[in-house]
Image (tube, rainbow, N blue to C red; front, top):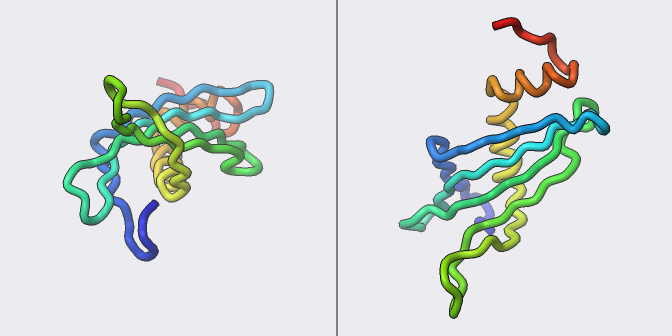
Length: 115
């Protein structure tokens, strides 16, 4: 977690987004991967963020994981992070993308745009 008053530096050029409509609930499921550098860190940490948004209720669920090295194991593994600040930052960025407009158009949230 970050200390009170510090803000993480999200490396937006590393952001990878995917989204799919959940038609049964009229929600959008978003999966994001992004690197974040907290103040005082030399290296950025990689986060995997999953969240579900609803037209009427906003953010309805989320899960945040950080990629960590595991002692005695080969490679790295995902570990629960609980970083809501990153969820909100990525959600706000997602809502400004063409991907959001496309998926929201499939659900009828916004008028479909013609190419």
